[in-house]
Image (cartoon, rainbow, N blue to C red):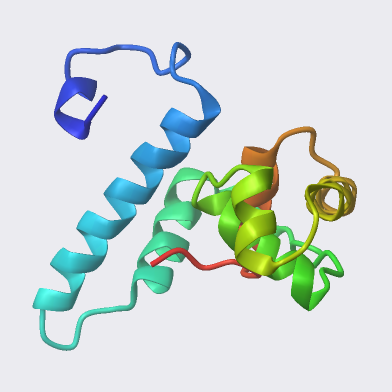
Length: 132
């Protein structure tokens, strides 16, 4: 599904978590490209922060506690954001799949979420992970 297809849909509940993340990443990239064309424009992070204040004022007011993510877990988070499988992450980082599974489990526990997508979104919200 692309952004244009969304105009025909009233509801996004039918999309999987990864389809929603893909949509988010595409919109984010499009906004970054448009913002970069304007001289003196705000950064993408500032834009999303400003939009969050408009859409979710209560959430913006509450400080987001940072999860204590290790450097290796941060690397794994980066690959989770790219929708890589455990096997792909293991091959890239030269570690076993079981080690990747342990890192993913630790990440989920630290962010108190049940899905990989939830962890990625939590990391983006707190600023641990930036997606460009």
